Length: 426
Image 1 (cartoon, helix red, strand yellow):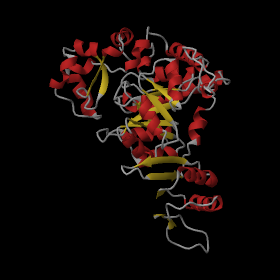
Image 2: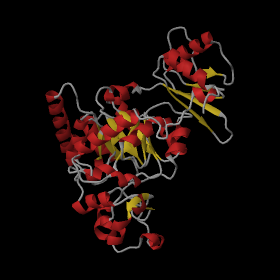
Image 3: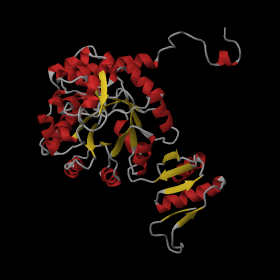
């Protein structure tokens, strides 16, 4: 049995919490009545053994923009959740509808993403993003957002037939980030449409973004973090799979997406070695709504990266990527040639004392003092990056490859499907 505290009731209604008995099969009429009751109570409900099809029906009948998650605990008991939220997932579609050339978010690149890159990405037709901590000092965040918004507004005025894609700001939620509250206030002032959260999920942050009409996406590397993010009010997930740049996960994108889609039907971006339009299409076929691409954009003219870093992206491939937690305190993928250039052996990083995770002022001091300040992150997909180009040219390549992938026939030309099922295959 579960209960939920309701808002003030209409005259004549009994007081006290709503009570729902789980495990009961209900008729459509009973489900509709319960759905209406839940819609009035505006509460989060949890019920063991409540069937997913009934949960979907409840959300649909109640018209509460049902964001439905079905997860399983260690005993494989179904747990259905119906969330009534002040920032419905419909906002996600509203921000993106008619504004994306291809289903891609340019991921926020630490130190590399800047206004020039974000503007180029958004005007080319993909979501552009940057970490709030890239704006230094903190007061620069307001200046950056003002610059980006003005540029996108000017683009929309010149090209009303192809408006710019929305921007996103990445917030590091880790407790060592002393700027979080201030940066969030600045994002509120600019009504940032999409906020990407990392290294911590906080209900109050999600609610703050919802209050100004935005949506939140939380990056995760496994199901435990994914469920926590949704439970705490995130609108969607960024599934960081094996091969991704930055703080990468270790799970295959096939497994990660398949397990997410068993219980979550909301927005999902997939990250992990995606650097081609074929990879974007593959992400969709695995169940993602958009692809999350970062490393390929390091080798663009607008990126705030040195020429050596950009050229190393072009010259390297998957075999040149090393995974380690030595440099930031969190496991991430890095370019082995940059580790060698810093005087270390990529094969012996276990002998190096790891840095404690720190996203405050101490992080800058550590980077200045340590030999590895010029060690560069990257994902495994960089073998597809052949030259340094403008960001718009990279998006053009991705769009061309994506279109080709959408219309491509199976490479081996095998006959499958109905002919096989009816025994007519050769």
